[in-house]
Figure 1 (cartoon, one colour):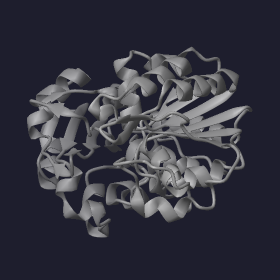
Figure 2: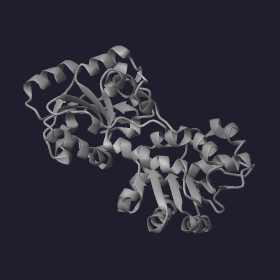
Figure 3: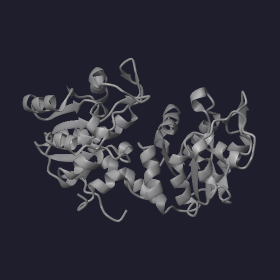
Figure 4: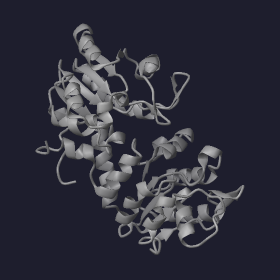
Length: 365
């Protein structure tokens, strides 16, 4: 990325109204937050803005299994996690009213953006309504910055707009992987190959080794004519791998573990070979689990997470399921960088940019 993103430190937001795009899309159980990783990453910016007596309007979404939930019931839990009062605005007019009645510094959380049809439709009129709430815009939501939504790509063109410190750090760290030290190892797991194809194609000539695991490997096995039983695989992606499946630097599991007729995890031989690659690597990028962790087949994923945490390599980890595993193992602090993005991380690695980056760059309005 040749152009520098404008940083929020470059604008005076003291006692002004700032729109801050954040990722409060958290797993919820009984109106309690089950994983606050992304919220915690956002708090330094929010506290910095409050110290400057800024009136903050937070913009986010809350979606579980494609069902859009309201932030209303989650406000008490968010206040506990954030350690500050948060006013809830069910609609844009309500947010305007709160800005008039709540003394600065203040934090207002607008209702789930996905509840507004204009968000996903990238409606210019909706973006203009959002812009009326602020005098500046800060994107601190790297994880959603691959989506061409109104609050991501159109809103920043209507206000003085900046990248937050979390966003800036994500780009800085992921940029290192585009020109990595060697030996460089790329580990990809999960299910949907289409989201990772661009990464494989870009790194096929950059990485010394690319390990393909999880259900992702099933597509390669299928293309090779191997019996995968009832294993799940991305059928639509099968024709897409023909160009890369013969590459000598791609490694597949050698002893996949079957359960009830389907491949569910990587076996000990595979894990041992991958650990050796990790021990030799100067840098590793990992996205996606190596087994069906939601069904309890997490041995391979755990072993590799521990090996990566102990390695001397620069290790970058991303993807919701992957990060959840390392969080449960208490290893998040052991890695060079833990990305808040899954799809955004993959898109950036594949293309070197994101829709949100293009919207924030000067002269791109």
